[in-house]
Length: 103
Figure (cartoon, rainbow, N blue to C red):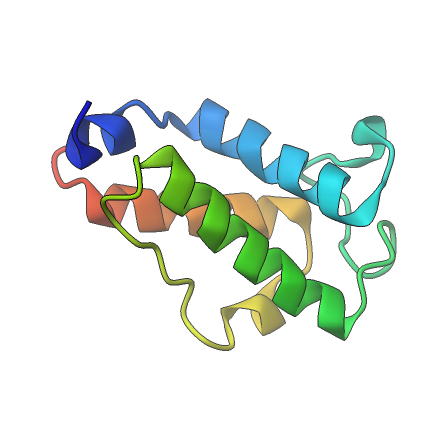
């Protein structure tokens, strides 16, 4: 599978599940608490360092998902705009869509 077909297989639903999985693994939170509406800082207790760790973990996971043939860089400072899990999902979906035109 080449990078573009790997990216193309990442549906918004799969990306949302991936974001939830990364958050659950990274911050050891109950998966049922990780909803689109869950607030990262207030509900899931993600601190400022946690936001940086989340960014790096997502970039690494996206790199693996596209068969290591592409890189996703979440723009510096983007994590400061994230309030909810939904905000993170929206950014990841947008980045993947930008990387795979015609999706």
